[in-house]
Length: 86
Image (cartoon, rainbow, N blue to C red; front, side):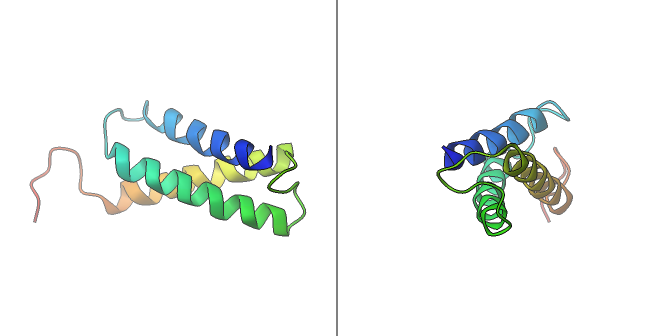
């Protein structure tokens, strides 16, 4: 159950990121959000916020924030939409 919460929280961050601004680097952002969700969920388990089989709202919030931060990093590193590649 906890692992499912991590996936849902990471996916929710990615879906919300689709609206601000829409249509940018969808696959890279999705991969970053899901990888960050797994890492943040593991860290939340180490901090005793639930576990991989025990959902906890604190873990969900922590994973959501970490996934949103990972998406922000991808957007900062990626070139602007429509910009010519170097």
